[in-house]
Image 1 (cartoon, rainbow, N blue to C red):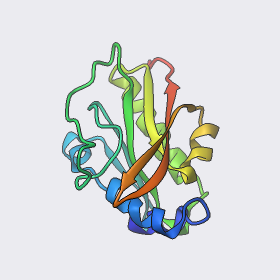
Image 2 (cartoon, one colour; image 1 turned 180 degrees about the horizontal axis):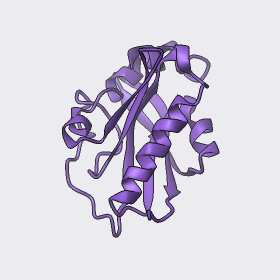
Image 3 (tube, rainbow, N blue to C red; image 1 turned 90 degrees about the horizontal axis):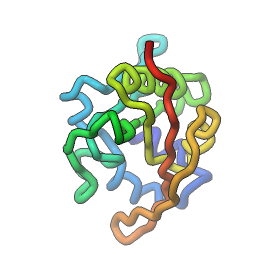
Length: 161
């Protein structure tokens, strides 16, 4: 995760913003406890990870103060959340993120959700747009006095068979 934050945001954020990103991004162990976090391996190496959630938290890791909300969502009216998506820099642009995203979307649909929502970094915006997510709201997260631009995005899901 740290390598992904540092390497894949270069060119999108300043060094100060990349450092600040660590305070608002990272592992959310609630996803692991809920059994909704996926790991992709390639050639015996962890190539990427990501998950989906039926909880209200939209983004942020275990250490992210004020961002966490464990409230369960109602699939009839709320979008599931796509969370903590990271690709190891050595495996970027090889389909790892798309694979994890598809599996998360299918799992959310299988659990009755008709939409998913995520908070994209600038480096992830292109991938999510190509995968059918539409921009909802641009925000400026603040960490350690530094603003980090983020984009809330949503996608409608096809009903699961």
